[in-house]
Length: 581
Image (cartoon, rainbow, N blue to C red; front, side):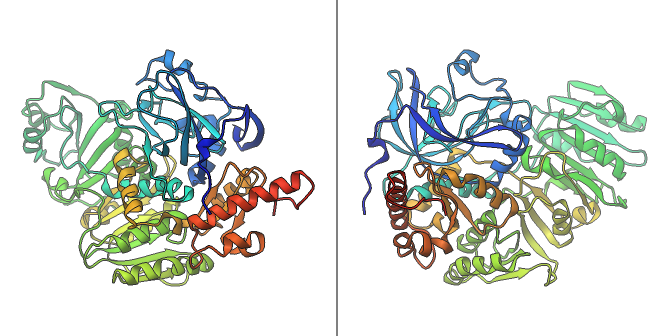
């Protein structure tokens, strides 16, 4: 069956929308006014939306979420005042940032977008900072869990490049396949992100030295990448002389107690005191790096590492047992990409995002990779095995799926992806790490969540904690190209589908981790509740017949949209049963 393009219909005056109106408060608004686009604005009709664990965080935190805050810069305040879908603070918002849509109306001054274009939405507005993060579609700008969304062209073009945040997509892929490119792009970003291997040029450097430690290796680092400012906390006159010799114009001295929070791009610590290390991490600015130079001394106890800032603020930890500060940077990888021969551990492998990491590792074409997928739910592991074992076999990649509650994991992994935001799992990943293990903290740990990490082992084995949040346009384009080439079927992630009435149950399932994959919402289906693919034969047999060995397809999607809409129409006229399962 071919369906007419969604953009062919004229928008109604009102629409169905899911709104978060306070902490833990969700409403299904059945009569939200559809905004009319102004001269620089455009209206898109939403085809499909994926539910993300991040949506549950927004629901609980609401105005306390960093991305629900007021935009501080990057755009004229007068422009923001003209955008009704800008809803910071206590204003109700519409969640949903995994979106496929079609442009149905444009204002007279819109130049880069046209009616009828089908699009993938890049949702991370990194050019619009908030107090702790940045603006985002589905947070302080209304998202896709509604039938229509208003956008303003003045803020959805990337500064500097002019690239569009609405990325055109061909007509071929299904709506769910397009919507789910966003989480796959976030996975892509966590591997593609380029790591910094030097001091930040023109950045702010803090050097702290305990008594008995020589300041060594800084001269070479500074000559390659000169900071703009240096603050020193030195114990001896010799150390202060070593700092002065670096010839950095803005040199100041301070005490560790008076250090400003989140102010330094690089912190180099010559010492091994765990309490000092814990204090110094608080001085790191976003994207900052802490270098612990122990000079052969032992830290002696676990260090409480802020793993939330590794994920959201992209802070990094390096260290060396030598006396030379430059030695630590030699263990920093170019990126989070897998390397030939990697022994990969995916923690939380049977969840929606874990499946994506396993599939990427198995199908990435990196020679000699082996994978262990760990989870604690046998039913979800069985679902994962059905999906990923054929992919791994087709690529000749050894794959082992284990219930980590029942089967101990053997140490020696050289890559670990942590998909569950439980601090003890980061502790465990370091304990299981082999030489030069990269530990990808993909799970969205809240900022200031700390894990007790054996930093002595971390430094001895040259581990590297990395993490990213969201994606950029290039990541979106990379996974879109894979989809359009046929190298990636994002629908293998789908576990359940629903309409607007099923969103509350979908969020509950995602938060409770009872879903073995992604849940896709079709906003045009107002009254359809949550239906797992395993339940389709009973609820929507025509759609079930069009699954591909249990996997969601465009043909199944077409049948669902047809039959669920017909069922709802019949119920409304008294000619059929309700669509609510």
